[in-house]
Length: 515
Length: 98
Image (cartoon, rainbow over the protein chains, first blue to last red):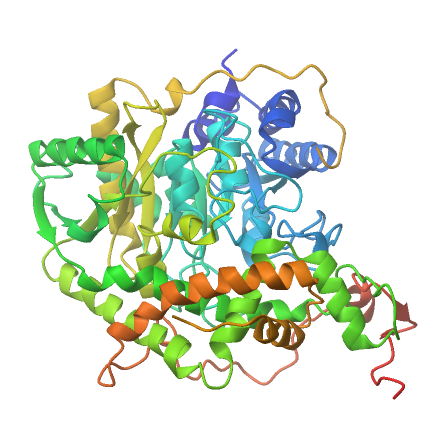
């Protein structure tokens, strides 16, 4: 029998629909693979083995009874720990929420359940999504399946590592400054940040509310589109959710697989997002991809986005400011841990301060203090106010570019996966890693990362970022699927087929609970 | 150059309700100075004629009908609390003894 963990969600969908495999078989295969390799990868903070198998059995029974089921019914999915789940702990990678089981599901989780997908567990992340490497998870880092000594990207390194090591065909992520796209780039997988407001954030533990967006993490563009169709659309529980009706992203991805789909597509190359500071092999694969695009009939146009230079500075003012406000909710009263001070009177304020000292890690403290500073009297206009103006300028850069081109492209990240510890002592070095992904968050436009090869110097995955105008997510899927097909045809295989086979660890940890 | 002092960081930590150690305050004073110097470049292009953008997709007046919808039960709302007293969250003293 085929190894079902190697199949895409679209392929599994066909096998489940014609009943050549059952959801229980598919789910068990993934759970066994998690048990075999995740002690080494550490993509999961929690695995819900028994619940997943029970849900899978219910889906099989419904299918046997002739119920009408959606295309992804019976397919396993991993859920980033930033999303609230009724039946699993939701910690956002922080000690302050250790063991917290929310009294509600995030809307995207509810939609995934309603569509019959099988939640396998919760994936690791930098604490409160602050980081680009998972090194800031309070529960230890996730290892890149391509090289265990390297980071899987962040904050959503757990979700990206889970799909790229075949522990799940699908995962959910969240992207505030690149937390879906950068992990996809460094693990050779696919990740999409939808248009701001295109997917509900209700039940997503808030980092920076004007930037956060939930989206799909997968191994193929079509799978991302299928998952986007399940989670997207208006949610009255999220007042920033757009009321637009959306076309089928899966239909758009399938249209992209047709012959000649790239003919006449105007592809803008952002001058500022390449060159200095970009690893040689990243730039090389990007240049080669542009040549292939040109040969496929796309029109390559160089565009300039002069204000992107200020994006990181604006982002690291806006994000900490909003985070310092959002994280004020961790007050040791309503949820999470409570820690009493070592000495002195036990007042609410002092208990709150002791709890936040014990419960927050170094990056969270750094950003809360920075945000508190940026918002404080006397500095507000110079910092937060100016950053919001930069945001306008970046939106204008996008608007000007999109009058000339249909999509914009750049490398998804300036380098391949770096080694653990490389950027831990220098916060600004870690922040600069987000140079390519941050502009899309500041402007609210959708962005996708898909693999465009291995860097010759280190053999590690390189990602291509595609961006489209706001609300044109379908265009992203159409062009993305076309580029993916073009690249795979040029290689003769998928990128992930080149990833090392991971050996099972000595001791299987197949019990319910944390791994 | 920004002039961030240890006193300032201690004050910010107090505002943010985080009981930082002296070592943490020292380290953050240096790091914050570097980060603030770096992000201050936003002022180079943030001229008075540029309007500010607070949200990428501007929405105004998102209303819903004023009707009761399902919400958490008391038991659900209290389920994650570190301490409770019957149907209420139990908290330490709000006021200091002094």
